[in-house]
Image 1 (cartoon, rainbow, N blue to C red):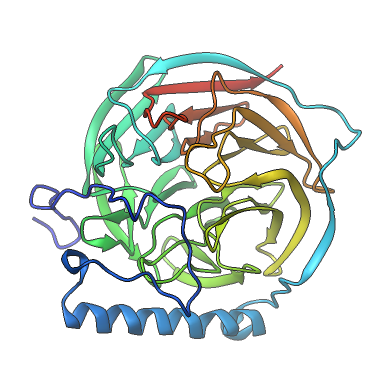
Image 2 (cartoon, rainbow, N blue to C red):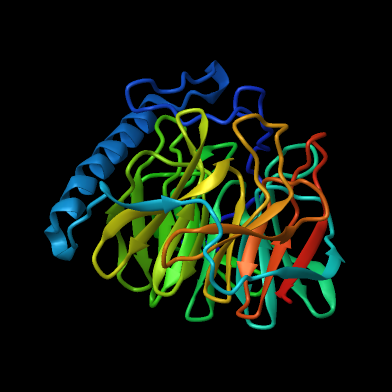
Length: 371
């Protein structure tokens, strides 16, 4: 077996515990205590602490423009509209529904040639899965397995190649970046620290990984990954953030809602990779986290999600104008869902899986088009 491949066979199964089911992103001063069975060996603790310290040191450097970066102005905010924008409305329609091989929540989803790859996630029993599912015109089928069973990761395609970032599993938060082929995955790099609860979007030749959680602290960094050039901290969020809806629109990375502390957020942020600036451009109509983000017609689309309570799922689809941050309703899901995966395919957005208010995990892939 080559050095850059791993086996999932011996990986212990992750099952979501009652304490990890809560929406939580505690500040750096109040880390989540680890249960005895979750405690890593002392060497792992030291290594993780060193990695976190390194990341914390990198963030201010990025803000100062060191190492070839650009100034970050997280405090530069827009007007924060929540009403309709008065421009051309974007209305969506459900075009098709396909049945997945198994229900899934919190998968990572990426567009690939001819379809969509669905990677990992939590199954109906809230155990991490390593499944790789391809959705195309012929339906949805399992095509392989990830090296590790992971959930709460992010995926993005860079120049047609899919990559998988971070995630949580039985061994803790992963820092691996996997290059994902049609039926296999190989190690392509490492994040500065292991992180789950991340979002990702591609602009140009790089993917941008937003926020996350190390299982000790929540992150306020935006990390850039460029194949062949590694990773760097490219921007800083106004506050630590997890479970945000993220998509690329018009050369910017748009970030809506998410969890900070233990509360769902309302801010709509725009990150400009060319300048490193993060600014608030608007406000969601209501606090929202665990929503899926996509792009269509020059708009950020926010699908479903929920509030701070785990049973507060919503069915609304919101369309956000990146020019002024205004949000308006663009349609509805068949039912209220959070924890979906999403991939944008130019003229359509594919939504995968999700969780409803009763806790039922869904096994459909929904395709939405503009009317």
